[in-house]
Amino acid sequence: MTELLDSLLRGAAVSARFSRDATLQGMLDFEVALAAAEAEVGLIPAAAVAPITAAARAGDLDWMALRDAAACAGNLAIPLVKQLTARVKTHDADAARFVHWGATSQDAIDTGLILQVRGALDDLGADLDALIAALAEQVRQHRATVMIGRTWLQHALPITFGLKLAGTLDALLRARADLAAVREQVLCVQFGGAAGTLASLGTQGPAVAAALARHLGLSEGATPWHGQRDRIVRVGSWAATLTGSLGKFARDTALLTQTEVGEIAEASGAGRGGSSTMPHKRNPVGCAAILAAAARTPQLVATLFSAMQQDHERGLGTWHAEWETLPELLMLCGGALATARTLVDDWTVDTARMRANLDVTHGLIMAEAVTMALGESMGRLEAHRRVEARCRDALVQQRHLLDVLREDTEITRVLSAEALERLTDPQHYLGAADTFVSQVLALADAAVPSTQHGRTSQ
Image 1 (cartoon, rainbow, N blue to C red):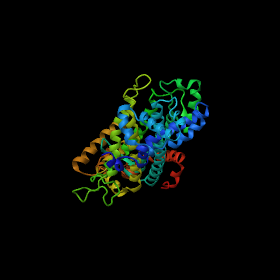
Image 2 (cartoon, helix red, strand yellow):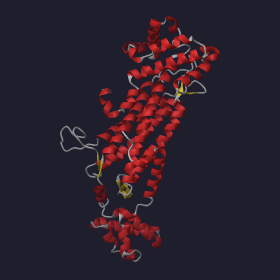
Image 3 (tube, one colour):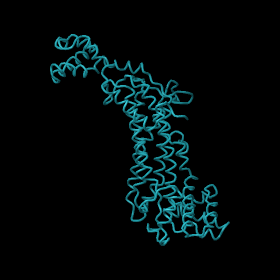
Image 4 (cartoon, helix red, strand yellow):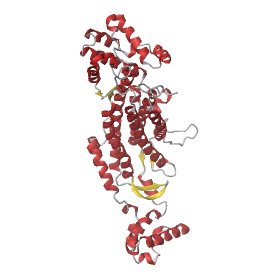
């Protein structure tokens, strides 16, 4: 079932980082780097490195045997090391003695996972930059496109579509900034041996750890982190937060695609957004996929938080709970990012419908503008009371608010006909919308310079 839904829900590039072979190769890369590091400091013969390296290819392993053995061993690393040792032994029996020298299963699994996470973060960062560039282009295009702002799902005040998109763009820029901190804190080698002391390596433990980190291109922590899982939670929380921001974007977009609203339509085409029974349907399938990811991530990240309560120097079950959870979080995030990019690139924005929807309430959305102008002369409370009464009259009489206001002599004594007409025009009540848009675009240009010139290349 999972594979059948991969193209709908998960990012292809990120999913490849957590494939069966990629998972095994991450642990094998640890074993190769460990051998190289230990040879470098003189703990094992230098001649052992090449045979170990040659045998450490995921495609050569019997993955079904690994799968079956993991059920008894309690993890994949134990049978993997046995298979790797056997493969090395067929070519160099002496080198086989030094496979996994002084390490423990968690060292291979945790560090292998971090290598996979590094690749996933590379992919997510690239996709995030591409989405930021595409969204920035849309913000520029629609910075003056007036539409209705909605609170509690009801018409509130005029805004611009550019400002609405700028809110999402601002959130994505924060996610981009956070990613740099996540990478710095999370991409750290995990190497502690049986109980976190590296006692099996004698006095050479710290030197091996430093060399291992260097060979893998990872940072070296002050201590092994086998029992401290904040790094795992940190990257999972980042992915969940980004997916949540994309979910907010998808929710708003989906609401704007409703037939009664009709301000946005997702791309259509053969086999896209249709119905099995209703030929006329143009369903927001992209929004649905993003929302499905956003609905799942809170529970997944909650699992990671629950797993922080590890038992002493190695967790019983809590550690195991991370193995599928973190990859799923990252894959769902990748899928949401890719889908959001396609959505922004290919949607149809109906600016005429946006303008028409501003008039659905026959001017009532401009009551605040009139109240504020009146309040300068008669005080805010009195102005609010009088305009509220005229709003009720407009509703009962089914007339435009401007026409009703023109008949109130107390109001026309303060505001001229021209002033009332301007005050009830949504175009003239946008406040600092354009300023806010400019501020976000400036941040986008500084973070991703390509946003100044349109979309990034595919």
